[in-house]
Image (cartoon, rainbow, N blue to C red; front, top):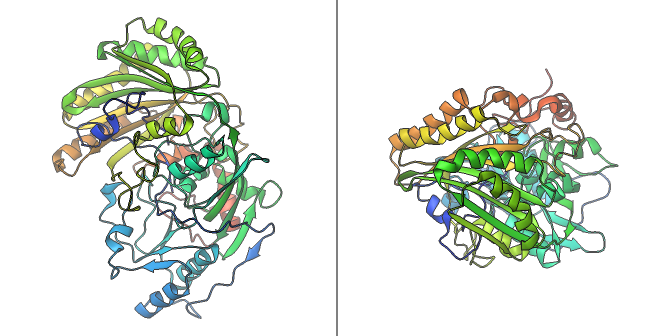
Length: 545
């Protein structure tokens, strides 16, 4: 329901040949690389599904004639009614199928997971949940930062609806809601087109797109949500609606940044896609003594950067490995052009980088490097628990986000440097980071009320993370959590907002932080499509008072 997006790209230092930082950071001695979206699920390519052009109502088989408690027989009847499958605790696959991407939620045990193969399967699950007052959670793949991709009741998993079809003449792509990013990039990239999105390969497209979709091509081509042309959604009453600019346009508006799991269960999208640009990756690393100068120079530089340039600035505490100050990014153009754009940045920093790389990469290879799976096949860039050929593991992490709206002054720079040093002093074996992801360009040219995504005036989004491994002691984990709480009190400006795809259960006024001035309209749309509040979780959009 949320997006792991582009947070810490270039984990292999940009060239794809040196040691992979993402693998190292997952050991718990370094920051976990979490990229915002949504969810993970098994890939299942069906025959091409074309959403209806007019609203239709499915006819699910009702499991009961009146509200009442569930029984084993009713759950079995639900399973038998699905084209897909229902996994209950007695199923030998349950132990794996219930897992979310973030292993800190491994103790969640839903009553069942419905792997829906069709929109009608989704409607049957919603009917069941309504009839029996069963809590439910839509799941595109399970990357919700708050664990909201699961429920104590029924998980409605759409990972089997994952087909991808590109229309080159229209520059559009139909994408099933359960498709994972590595497959989206592979299929659309093989057609010579690009969809901007996050970098985590196993994230589901639905959560990523519905909450925004920050990525390395965002300044050039916009957020993932900005590229949604239409979508098919099963709403609380079992209707399968097609939402576009002419039909249910309010639902399309809300789905462009209003967050996953709030209005219904999306089963497919139609996206705008773009001709493939030339792609150049770059990485600059600096001694920690130059970190403050680097951050200050980066803020001024990115504020004036061309749309073709995306970058982020990273301040990391790598546990016992010390500190890392790094700027990494992607340029839509040649290495020569990228080097020219970088010249003003390196001149402003003044200190020679301890490591630098600027080089061309083809699109898919670039995204594999961003994903931390450079050198692996597309099949291997999946979770071991979701694909027999997958080589990637789960991660454990916590995060917090905020925004900055202008280049940083000296006091702010010193505050952020101190924040990383504070983490290293208080928890020297915990990996943690502040990553500043550039906004601007096409992202900020969209009016704040044109879509539900309200954060259109920001220079950058800040993501603070810390990560751990299974070997990390509870006290060390607690130290990392204490650091995030300390950031909330001493560093993060709550009034700047927070990114809804880095959903944060610790926020107090989260509706305003996520949606700002767009909140009241989102609440009204919630009333229209889910007046009974079927789609609810701890941070779901509330109904009007």
